[in-house]
Length: 340
Image (cartoon, rainbow, N blue to C red):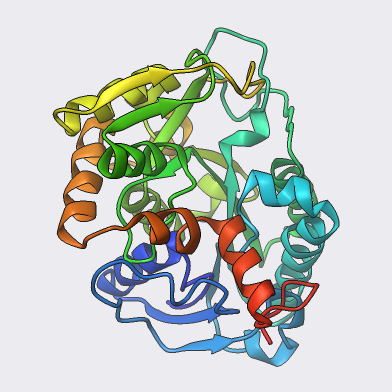
């Protein structure tokens, strides 16, 4: 297929682009470049791409594509709470507009990167599946719920949207994110020798490695249309349904000599849920999320040592909200978060 990959210069897109290319697809990127220079280690070899804000994509750009893999978003809960209007503008309105342009251009498959955080405060001890009530607690998660609903309305015999609700991502990417839970805890342990948990450690989180997300999108891209048409799929594995305290314990084990401190200072976290991932395995025979939390912690610790992660880079360059603040202060970002 000829595939348009939005967000190809982001944390997940940088991992996904070569996975799709290795499967034989012709990959073309689309990215505003907000985080293109947030690289740790060797610079990635990006596919050819378009430098354009998601809100400004011209209709003619969608011509000639067989599929769109849509990752681009303002993907940070603190940022969404700080600027909810911008979050809805980019994540909701611009995403639905892109899907309409794709459908009108003859694109047949549209894979949308949603999130398991749509389940929010699930209020249940059982595993939640794709039919569970959606209870988002942040503007970021709410924007994902809205897009899914709107894309269902766009689906027809010639246009197949699919919603991949990714668990919380982890693992090394050449374009690192330090503000997601496992990557953050390993970074703090690497830099300070301390694994610091600000909650009480009891909330449940489903985790999934960036590469396992990439292979899920790769497999759904060519899955039987009837099996995936206008459906949601949780992406991850039940083995990685873990509490924050369990995640922290894996980090301590991956970085010998580090110590665990659970402060509880952030108060109770309403986002607690365990997820069922069986539907994706049934729809895409052979798919399995392979990376464990333990293996991801070891991988991250090795990468941080090998590439010399510094405190300045960890807290500013690889933290989304801090990076955008720094760019705005430097005058390279306007008030709508468009690059100057």
